[in-house]
Amino acid sequence: MKNSKITFIGGGNMASSLIGGLLETGVTAITVVDSNPKPLAAKFPIQCYTNYAEALVDTDVVVLAVKPHIMPEVAKSISATLSEPLPLFISIAAGIRLIDLSRWLGVDLALVRAMPNTPAIVQSGASALFAGKYVNEAQKQLAENILRAVGLTIWLEDEEQMDAVTALSGSGPAYFFLIMEAIENAGINLGLSKDVARLLTLQTAFGAAKMALESQDDAATLRARVTSKGGTTEQAINTLQAGNLESLFDQALKAAQQRAVNLAIQFGED
Ligand SMILES: NC(=O)c1ccc[n+]([C@@H]2O[C@H](COP(=O)([O-])OP(=O)(O)OC[C@H]3O[C@@H](n4cnc5c(N)ncnc54)[C@H](OP(=O)(O)O)[C@@H]3O)[C@@H](O)[C@H]2O)c1
Image (cartoon, rainbow, N blue to C red; front, side):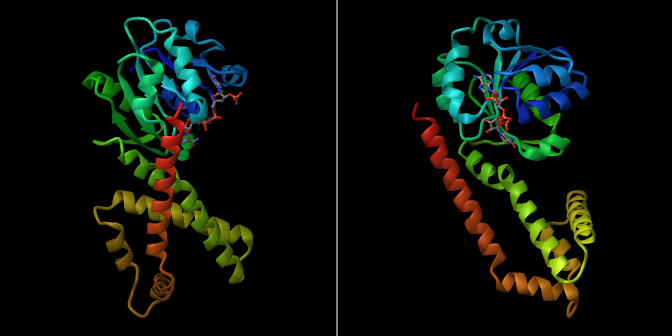
């Protein structure tokens, strides 16, 4: 990967996270096309352009990192500049199916669809990837290495699972922020100061996630282990379960998945 030339189309938040992570892994040939590339050029030692043709010369990988609604227009413009050997394309745009991207690009080429999430900003993201039919093993490895620069990666066998991934890890950070918000406020209601409630909430969330990641046991086992019969935790868990927390999450993720399906249909109409 270190010798590959990687071109980002769109130099916003997610591209910036990926570029930061890639530079740390030793990749040096990074190019970005953005409507206003100056802030990125000031932040990173990379080449910035405002037009596709120049940036795409000799590129091995193109990372499509523009907002989904402008992807048809961007892909069609790029299509006009493509020449052999064709680069590997990685799209990180939410809700853009490979079949639509391929139609807009207008040629059969190696396409990978990836779904990162916002903790990529602190190199703790979770990205799911799906490889289209023209992607070879070396290109799969390259795509994985690029996304791994900002966190863990996982391959999907079926592109349709991207909608479930969007509902789980794509939107997931917001669910945990909501839970942190609720616990912090509950702590304040019990008489703690805002600062104390915030710090204890965040460190508890971090510690629980770290413990679960490092343990061989599943979350249910870890929870059972810290829930003594007749103790304080049991009282809280009973209250949450009486309020149907699990069923609420089930409904919430189904609603998010359905929205992802509908958005993909809508984006693909172009
Ligand atoms: N942020 C996340 O957590 C996250 C998670 C998963 C997937 N994604 C996906 O990642 C993609 C980028 O998201 P983001 O949050 O990084 O968005 P963003 O910060 O808005 O970045 C998009 C960038 O593309 C630029 N741009 C607009 N039109 C362009 C064009 N024609 N050619 C080149 N660049 C152009 C924008 O410039 P202007 O601002 O001047 O328009 C902006 O700098 C989206 O498709 C999103 O679905 C994001």
